[in-house]
Length: 79
Picture (cartoon, rainbow, N blue to C red):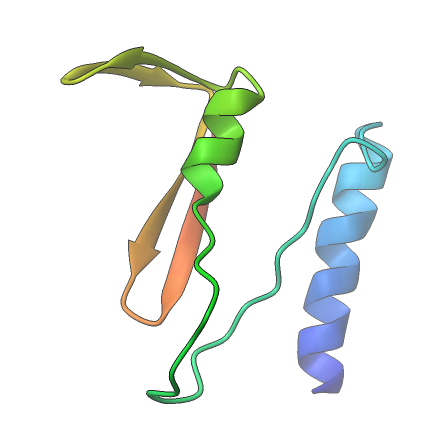
């Protein structure tokens, strides 16, 4: 767990160093089995609301996007 905490610290430090810690939301998620759930998070909807996803249908461009990968999600950010 200490190693994982250190990795989160590195991410937060990098965001702070680049000047946007206040405007950043960090999700730390994990998959611990097949428990039932009552809430679903759609991070790409939030990114669209914040102006980072543009277009419709097959003509979408993104400054950032989230892609689920099994029990985790990858966040891609341009520039």
